[in-house]
Image (cartoon, rainbow, N blue to C red; front, side):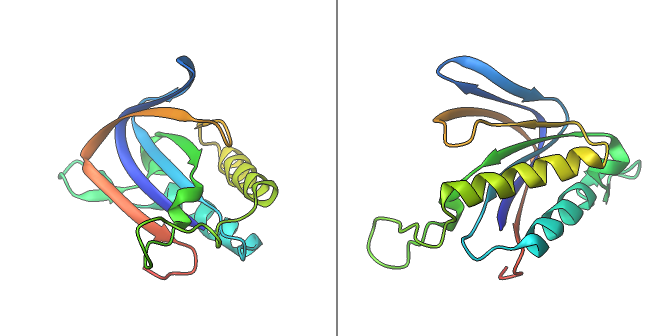
Length: 149
């Protein structure tokens, strides 16, 4: 699994001009699922994302997590995180999980984060979404469950 995580002041998703989800201070997560992913990849993301210490403490140091601050999560499925641009100019998506698997893994990350007591909002799987982001910092973190970067 791969994630692009942005610390946000607020973020919102619309589909066909209809508001779907919105959060205040917290993290916006674009989440991609790879065909080879397994339960351990879900567990990695569910442990890592809420506990990343990327919020400032009283001394202005990034030392607090989403759990520490009581922030919110907005998780959006993003198969393009597995776009391979090494050849040519058109990305290939052969390593991205098929929709059935991707949706199941996406749902599992959402539900497991909710089980931790985190307020989690979500995008609409396979929809053409418009995402508004007020990146705070800006702070953007890349995660790969196989630790490729």
